[in-house]
Image 1 (cartoon, rainbow, N blue to C red):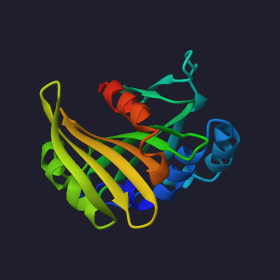
Image 2: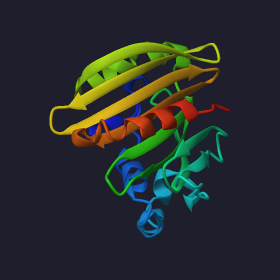
Image 3: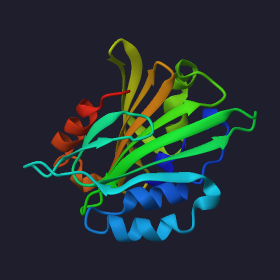
Image 4: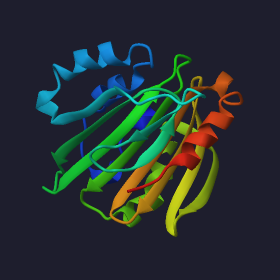
Length: 205
């Protein structure tokens, strides 16, 4: 479901997201070697790696991930990569995207992205989040959320092939956050508790 992880189009900007997907898609057992090969070729895209295959697993195999550049926290089911990217929008404004994420051996991808700057304030971007995904997937459920008094939206989707995704978006102070879990549909039920743990563990900066 790579289409589901594209950046919010309200920013009107092209980010080299295929590289980000490669970084996040490395499983816990291969994340270091595969990411190292990507690092050598991405200097031109202004991606800065803060950590690779990072984190100490707890008794359940989970790791507390922290974005070194943005400061947000989240629990992930394995070691993670931490990186950020700075670019200019078509209007000339600075946009920095901050990412932590990993993929399980079963192919479930967990990602948190924080967006700082850009052409619009987060509160103006949030209402369009569903529209940005509907072209690529069927939205099964949509509900409004709050995080410490700031608005958010949750979407549960499936694409037109064999994948599903759960997405939360928050307009939190000066940051726009996307929490995304992508999974094969046959793992939707068995992965439900892990998805809930991931989503509910998120702590913004």
